Length: 184
Image (cartoon, rainbow, N blue to C red):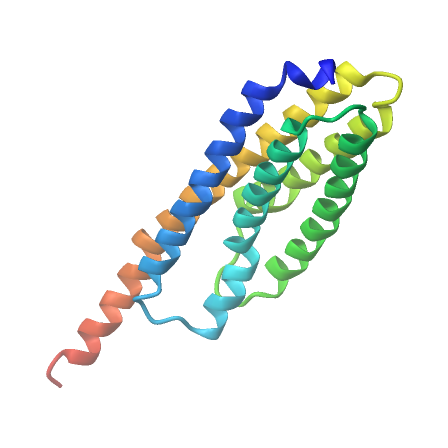
């Protein structure tokens, strides 16, 4: 399809970035696994780390999907629309997880990057899919904007998680170990 052909480079770059960042997240989680994991930390991981992988996965999925040799826009429209619906539902699940997890009190930045911006990205994607039949070119730009926003949300959230674990959690863990090993 001629309309999608112009997007191949964009989706190769974005999809490759998402794939590489998924791999890095696995490395980080493996390294973090060496510290003591509590039940509360698991719930916080479900609220803050898992969505990052989901967003990267969606970027990778859509990059592959929209780079396929489609003969019409109907297939990509349906897949992107279904992805937007899934992403919206998942973001609402993340909201519930953020509220229920006991390990960390989310700040304004967390609400923005883990709830508001993903919801906006999926809404833009859904709206773009609804307008695709009449405005295919504009819809493709809307979907691309949503995909790029999800990539940058994921980058921000991955960095934020690593920073928290290195500068806050690890420091608390080391302090606890020092107190336990200190002569009494």
